[in-house]
Image (cartoon, helix red, strand yellow):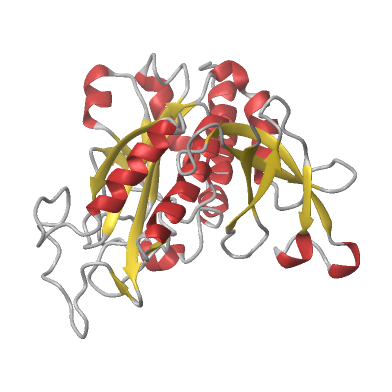
Length: 340
């Protein structure tokens, strides 16, 4: 029996890349071939030389179509086999391999917002809902909007075998979060992109748009982030390495901006110093401090080992980019300090 393989890739749209997908019918899932596409329609080529290559890197069951059908996450290559300039996964692979001995692990908290038309789900036409307060992890029709979509998305992520580990309603009406991890950098990033695909497809069935905009509602409303939890073997064994990692992320203003400038589009509207954020251009870290750039969880200080949470990445950040930056900065510092 033939199967449907949904090839998924990340395009070259700037400032925020979009997901693309198309279906190929295969005799079976024994061999997933490379495929081509029109890069001139995805901001990845010009029309006079438009062919680009889809190279399968991750195959999971398709929980939407069911049966033996599959989702195929791909890297984008040039026709000569080299990574396309939009292929951030290839850059991550190189850095992850360089510091593989430090055994980096990540967990990413993906916030997102449902929209119905031009307004966040739960915002009344011609006005605003009650101020923030009861929506976070809320219960009841006056507090929660879109739960049926969220539950179906969770089920589909589990059926696809993704490393999803939780969901919760967030601070603004129509805003939710799911978490992927704790797993290695490539797995957390691959699973995040596939989970995003499933989120968009699931919301589509309800006539709802799911957006990763950093500041989906202007004014006194929380933005949407992708808080990134990170540890190495040394950090999981001792507190000194925790401090070294925190210090490395703010070692210089150049280092601070290197990260922030690649942590997602429209970051300055979200990292204002309000709504549980630090100012975008000022680095800080602290124990149990959600107003810091990087938070050390309280239990990490108590146990003198564990992980850190970089609270700066936007919801629309490319997970291949944030994990690469954190590995490169923190692992290099830990290596220089002899804490590996």
